[in-house]
Length: 232
Figure 1 (cartoon, one colour):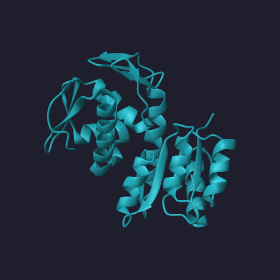
Figure 2: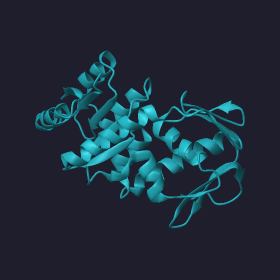
Figure 3: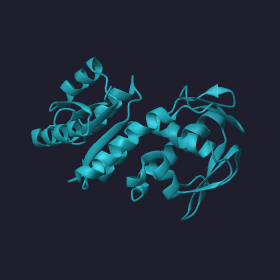
Figure 4: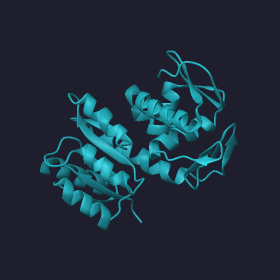
């Protein structure tokens, strides 16, 4: 069965171009020019990937992300304009997995789409037990000090990759490539936002800090916890 992709954008020209381009790649595509209609369609026709515009009248892409995240871990790719940097970060905080800046090249967008769809079946490895953590990739579940944690899909992917490399310094490029794909290596703001979110959740639940910053290089995951600065 071809992967299902839902596109929500209030610009008909954008939805027409994306429908044509994605369909030509063999995807099953549906579109909506109204975000509320898009949410209804999402519930009636659950897609494998959602692409949504950020700035839309009536209901923003941030609100779309929040609505979807109440019931689904489907990857969300946000389309945004460069002038709305704060809104892009807000969308990531609301559960978006990635964003592409308008105007965008269709080949870049297709590469992002393929990367996100590829990652869904990658979660098949057996559980990883390291330090205070048990990370079950197949069940998409994690416990810290024996207590279950609730993470967004991308927070989980980030922690999963760190847990697979305990004690090692993971460069910004390596983490961006592993979690968001090679097309995202020049978007370090994605990584900063998600590391910050992950740190807050881990420390709130356990009282410990686990992710150490290696300035100008990347991050180190210490699964037993550590004492030090948690700036990202």
